[in-house]
Image (cartoon, rainbow, N blue to C red; front, side):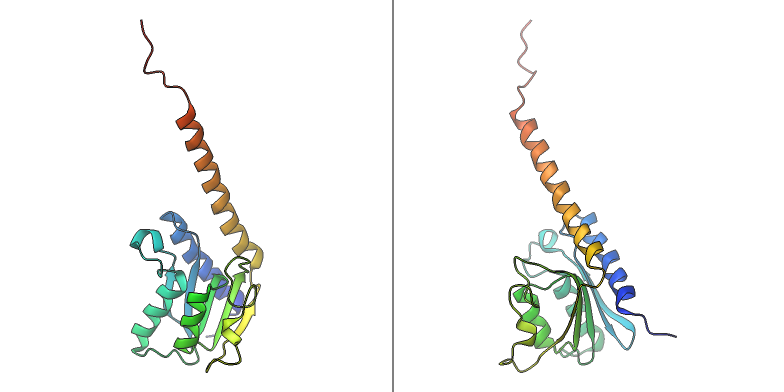
Length: 171
């Protein structure tokens, strides 16, 4: 069995992002791979679970740790469609993930190089190998189209609320 390359694993993560979109969540997907096998997968579920920590990375790491029965994920790689936020970057350092591969950069909260780089901070006791931009356009398009659709829905709802009602027609 040949090893899958980064783009194949990112396609898997993109399919998980579709699960998030299907339930109205921001479409981010993540998969944890160890020795060319999936040991954890996740997608955003913060809204569904009423849990601000239920990011795709968090869900995948939790599942992976349960799978290997260890809170350390030595030699594992995480593939995620969007650059991790500071919370998720901290999780990756604490779990000792060896490598992260992400698709789209996050210029608002990215903590793997865009606005800060917690994953390779020299004062931390673990640094994570970072590979960015894998299937970047596909990942970015998925998120952009989600937010464009959401803005359009909100605009339509606002216009609907501002429409005069026909219920008050007198005869």
